[in-house]
Image (cartoon, rainbow, N blue to C red; front, side, top):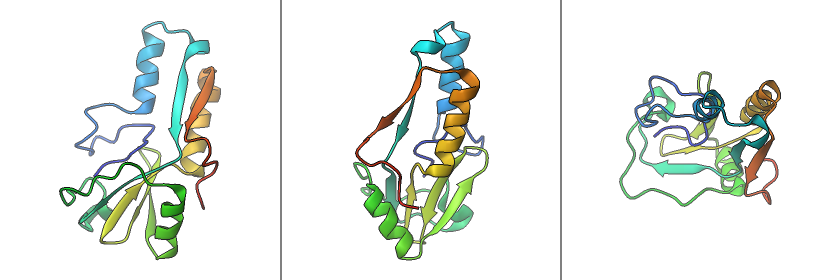
Length: 140
């Protein structure tokens, strides 16, 4: 399982197909898109899978078929943390995930948002669009 909302691609990730938020933004900028019209999306939900092996702290491992979810709310993220899941950080991708040896959840949090907002400031993009705005800060 890979990151749900990564800013940069990790070359070890077999699932991204070479794309990340940062790469997409750079592609549009280099193609001549107006910075004032570009938006960088952030999601306030996660993705979770069951049966993810523990090696590499769950990252980039296969998961049990049929465990795709439609989106995990911040309440689910908070509950998994309370049950003792360990938070990990993808230094290259600039994205967090949780793993508890049975389930892996990848999501957006304050740390990953700081990196995205840093890109906004550096690029002077128009704005950042936040999916599921009702879920303002993911539980920390």
